[in-house]
Image (cartoon, rainbow, N blue to C red; front, top):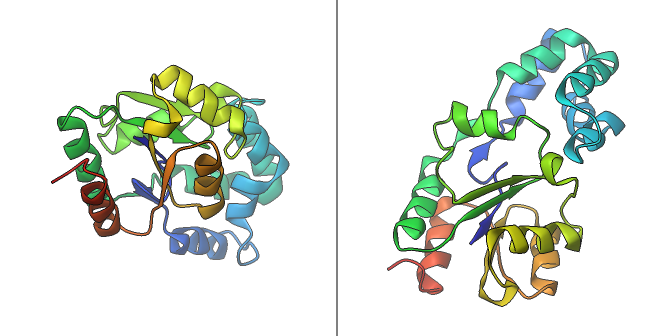
Length: 191
């Protein structure tokens, strides 16, 4: 099982970003694009710049105070989705996490106490590859020791799920832990 982290296991409340924007006098809807979609955001997720460089460059876009406020927020754990992964893993299914994330992925997992929820954790910054690049999935399969035709791929981004399906994985677009649980039962991974 290949599974995303952000907005699957760890939810990021847009309301937190909006509150930071208000506190720091930023335009509504500007923080997350600066953090994630800006050039430094994309470079950090691809592993082309380190976390401190990312912090400084995004700080130049939205102010260092806003960046530090965002970094204090580690998202909210979806304990039911985590329970699904633990249950699958307890049945002997290999679980690999694959996330487009900057160098902070492992600290977010540790913050929530789920560093051991998977057999392998792969972050795009460490791999130097971003989803939906097919090479990202190919490297995950190689490192995770699984074949595409045997894998269930769970992600909240439909186009990324579709990219995995093109390679032969069974895809599930994450909408809720309940829907994930139903999917796992239907695939025979849980009973």
